Length: 312
Image (cartoon, rainbow, N blue to C red; front, side, top):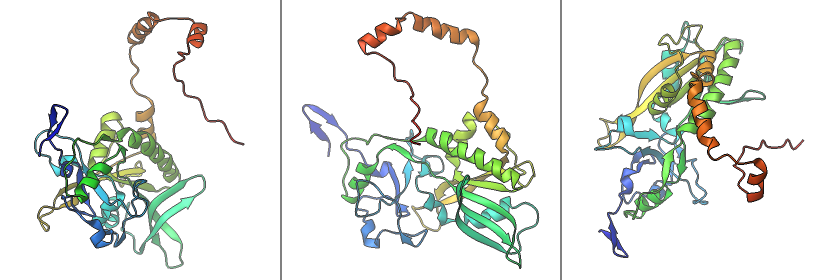
């Protein structure tokens, strides 16, 4: 039904074009995750995702559709917003297959969520454990989906109510957060792994990797077992699942490596803009030049970043 308000009209908005999957199944109006007790099929336990708008139950949205023109293609337009979605494939075995340097481990053991002061934590460490219990070689593994700005909660509500939306919710994929926060963490952890003569593997969506490489021109090598590589990107995308018509499955796309120093240099040292271009911007701003005292008097001080004080 077309929604009519105060002489204007708008077409209803289908929430299935926003939410990709709920509890690992293609999102459809009338979805009822409570019927399955919110059990995630990938971790075989209750979905751990939460929303402040759902204090008493999980928020089991696995993937979202990106805005696209024409018919959406899951390989490009469907993206992980929950890292547990990677669990649909045996990514740890694929890490060993594609990323392990030298001979394959004889006794690979997986340590979940390894933490250390001054380092932080990683989701998994695959360790080759010797007969005496000592760790010989190891690889760290981190999973990273993408978070969002705004909220798709109205779309999730509409799905459960088997309804359309009056308007598209305001939300976006937070590419900058992944680029600034996650890549910075990778550089730091890659540096540590370089000193440990090991590597860290970043398991991320292919779309996120394409975004990173579009902004940072770092050295990328298919020879991820090289001693020069200490950060490995292993990327997945979602594609149609032939064993479950209408559903999707993760597929391995890219395995490439780099070093922490190459990634750091690409992030920090961009090609400098021309001096003339910057002085042109200065002259444009000078047209609006006033004294600092006048700005203070009129209360028009521009917002400035103020560093947080040290509580100690």
